[in-house]
Image 1 (tube, rainbow, N blue to C red):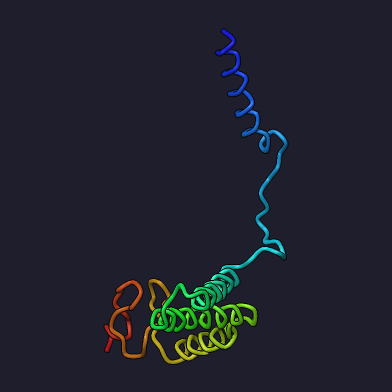
Image 2: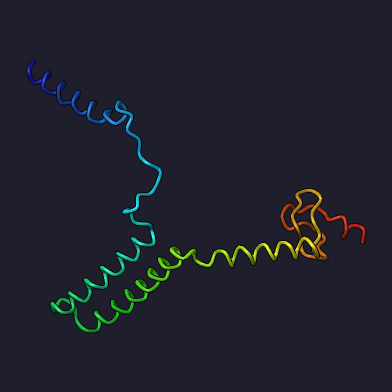
Length: 143
Protein backbone atom coordinates (compact mmCIF):
# COMPACT_ATOMS: atom_id res chain seq x y z
CA UNK A 1 0.00 0.00 0.00
CA UNK A 2 2.86 2.39 0.76
CA UNK A 3 4.28 1.62 -2.69
CA UNK A 4 1.08 2.89 -4.34
CA UNK A 5 1.09 5.98 -2.17
CA UNK A 6 4.71 6.70 -3.12
CA UNK A 7 3.99 6.24 -6.82
CA UNK A 8 0.93 8.48 -6.56
CA UNK A 9 2.96 11.12 -4.72
CA UNK A 10 5.71 11.08 -7.37
CA UNK A 11 3.12 11.22 -10.19
CA UNK A 12 1.38 14.17 -8.51
CA UNK A 13 4.72 15.98 -8.13
CA UNK A 14 5.54 15.43 -11.81
CA UNK A 15 2.11 16.69 -12.92
CA UNK A 16 2.40 19.77 -10.70
CA UNK A 17 5.91 20.46 -12.02
CA UNK A 18 4.70 20.25 -15.61
CA UNK A 19 1.61 22.39 -14.99
CA UNK A 20 3.45 25.05 -12.96
CA UNK A 21 4.02 27.48 -15.88
CA UNK A 22 0.38 27.18 -16.94
CA UNK A 23 -0.94 27.77 -13.44
CA UNK A 24 1.36 30.74 -12.83
CA UNK A 25 0.62 32.23 -16.26
CA UNK A 26 4.25 32.23 -17.40
CA UNK A 27 4.51 32.83 -21.15
CA UNK A 28 7.42 32.41 -23.51
CA UNK A 29 8.45 35.72 -25.01
CA UNK A 30 8.06 36.13 -28.74
CA UNK A 31 10.65 38.90 -28.80
CA UNK A 32 14.33 38.20 -29.30
CA UNK A 33 16.57 39.10 -26.37
CA UNK A 34 19.63 41.25 -27.00
CA UNK A 35 21.99 38.48 -25.88
CA UNK A 36 20.25 35.81 -27.99
CA UNK A 37 22.11 34.72 -31.14
CA UNK A 38 20.53 35.09 -34.54
CA UNK A 39 20.82 32.28 -37.08
CA UNK A 40 23.65 34.01 -38.94
CA UNK A 41 25.53 34.74 -35.71
CA UNK A 42 25.19 31.10 -34.67
CA UNK A 43 26.47 29.91 -38.07
CA UNK A 44 29.43 32.26 -37.78
CA UNK A 45 30.27 31.07 -34.27
CA UNK A 46 30.02 27.37 -35.20
CA UNK A 47 32.19 27.85 -38.29
CA UNK A 48 34.89 29.74 -36.40
CA UNK A 49 34.91 27.21 -33.54
CA UNK A 50 35.22 24.33 -36.00
CA UNK A 51 38.12 26.09 -37.68
CA UNK A 52 39.80 26.58 -34.31
CA UNK A 53 39.29 22.91 -33.43
CA UNK A 54 40.90 21.79 -36.70
CA UNK A 55 43.92 24.00 -35.93
CA UNK A 56 44.22 22.46 -32.45
CA UNK A 57 43.87 18.92 -33.77
CA UNK A 58 46.58 19.51 -36.35
CA UNK A 59 48.94 21.04 -33.80
CA UNK A 60 48.26 18.14 -31.41
CA UNK A 61 49.15 15.64 -34.13
CA UNK A 62 45.64 14.20 -34.49
CA UNK A 63 45.40 15.18 -38.17
CA UNK A 64 47.90 14.66 -40.94
CA UNK A 65 48.73 17.59 -43.22
CA UNK A 66 46.56 16.48 -46.15
CA UNK A 67 43.44 16.15 -43.97
CA UNK A 68 44.28 19.40 -42.21
CA UNK A 69 44.55 21.34 -45.47
CA UNK A 70 41.31 19.94 -46.91
CA UNK A 71 39.36 20.54 -43.69
CA UNK A 72 40.85 23.99 -43.30
CA UNK A 73 39.89 25.03 -46.83
CA UNK A 74 36.31 23.77 -46.40
CA UNK A 75 35.88 25.37 -43.00
CA UNK A 76 37.50 28.63 -44.11
CA UNK A 77 35.04 28.91 -47.00
CA UNK A 78 32.16 28.13 -44.65
CA UNK A 79 33.39 30.66 -42.08
CA UNK A 80 33.77 33.36 -44.72
CA UNK A 81 30.25 32.71 -46.02
CA UNK A 82 28.91 32.89 -42.46
CA UNK A 83 30.81 36.13 -41.80
CA UNK A 84 29.48 37.70 -45.00
CA UNK A 85 25.92 36.59 -44.18
CA UNK A 86 26.23 38.00 -40.67
CA UNK A 87 27.54 41.34 -41.93
CA UNK A 88 24.85 41.48 -44.62
CA UNK A 89 22.11 40.83 -42.07
CA UNK A 90 23.47 43.54 -39.77
CA UNK A 91 23.78 46.13 -42.54
CA UNK A 92 20.42 45.35 -44.13
CA UNK A 93 21.92 43.15 -46.83
CA UNK A 94 21.35 45.66 -49.62
CA UNK A 95 17.65 44.89 -49.52
CA UNK A 96 16.86 48.56 -50.13
CA UNK A 97 18.54 48.44 -53.52
CA UNK A 98 16.78 45.20 -54.43
CA UNK A 99 13.45 46.63 -53.30
CA UNK A 100 13.97 49.83 -55.28
CA UNK A 101 14.88 47.78 -58.37
CA UNK A 102 11.71 45.70 -57.98
CA UNK A 103 9.59 48.85 -57.63
CA UNK A 104 11.20 50.36 -60.73
CA UNK A 105 10.55 47.14 -62.66
CA UNK A 106 6.89 47.11 -61.62
CA UNK A 107 6.44 50.79 -62.54
CA UNK A 108 7.99 50.20 -65.96
CA UNK A 109 5.74 47.18 -66.40
CA UNK A 110 2.67 49.21 -65.51
CA UNK A 111 3.60 51.80 -68.13
CA UNK A 112 4.46 49.40 -70.95
CA UNK A 113 2.88 46.08 -70.05
CA UNK A 114 -0.58 44.65 -70.42
CA UNK A 115 -2.55 44.29 -67.16
CA UNK A 116 -4.74 41.23 -66.82
CA UNK A 117 -8.44 42.12 -66.47
CA UNK A 118 -9.01 39.07 -64.24
CA UNK A 119 -6.16 39.29 -61.70
CA UNK A 120 -4.49 42.68 -62.48
CA UNK A 121 -1.09 41.03 -62.99
CA UNK A 122 1.12 43.13 -65.27
CA UNK A 123 2.28 40.99 -68.17
CA UNK A 124 5.05 41.70 -70.64
CA UNK A 125 4.03 43.77 -73.62
CA UNK A 126 2.69 41.58 -76.43
CA UNK A 127 1.53 38.75 -74.15
CA UNK A 128 -1.52 36.86 -75.33
CA UNK A 129 -2.29 35.20 -72.00
CA UNK A 130 -1.76 36.24 -68.39
CA UNK A 131 1.39 34.76 -66.85
CA UNK A 132 -0.27 34.53 -63.44
CA UNK A 133 -3.76 33.13 -64.10
CA UNK A 134 -3.78 32.15 -67.79
CA UNK A 135 -6.69 34.43 -68.71
CA UNK A 136 -6.74 35.64 -72.32
CA UNK A 137 -5.65 39.25 -72.54
CA UNK A 138 -8.01 41.67 -74.30
CA UNK A 139 -5.26 43.43 -76.27
CA UNK A 140 -4.06 40.12 -77.69
CA UNK A 141 -7.59 38.91 -78.48
CA UNK A 142 -8.47 42.17 -80.25
CA UNK A 143 -5.19 42.22 -82.20
